[in-house]
Amino acid sequence: MNILFALLSGLVFGFGLIVSGMTDPAKVLGFLDLGGAWDPSLALVMGGAIAVGLVAFGIAKRRTVSFLGLPMQMPAARQIDRRLVLGGLTFGVGWGLAGICPGPALVLLGRGLPQGVIFVVAMLAGMALFEILERRKSKTPIVFHQPGRSPS
Image (cartoon, rainbow, N blue to C red; front, side):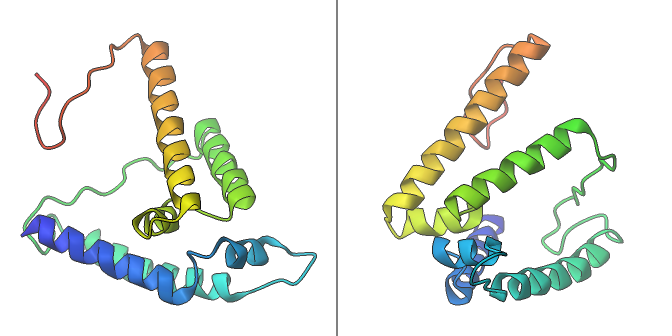
């Protein structure tokens, strides 16, 4: 049941991205072009997402289990540190250069569009590089395991 709900949620999210035009890199870049023909529609989409998120997180923080009976796993970190700021800046620069962020990239990938494939491959490579550097820093061996199975 959980997998079915996750699939349905992803489909609704992807459909919302398509309907709002947020899978079109030109539309996103139009929002980021403050000195040119600025397109404010992304701000409206973000405002709607923030409103929904505020309600959802308000409900979630008062619960110990989800509506599907799973334990709630709310973010625990509250501090703004160097890693968070650098990560946010890196994300923002990548978003500004490509006009794509991870959600729309998966929609583009699902549609078989080349920019989606390129973005997702680059995103996965960046995630792998981060993981390698973090493991090196902490001297923890990299162990790959199948999702859903505990590493042994």
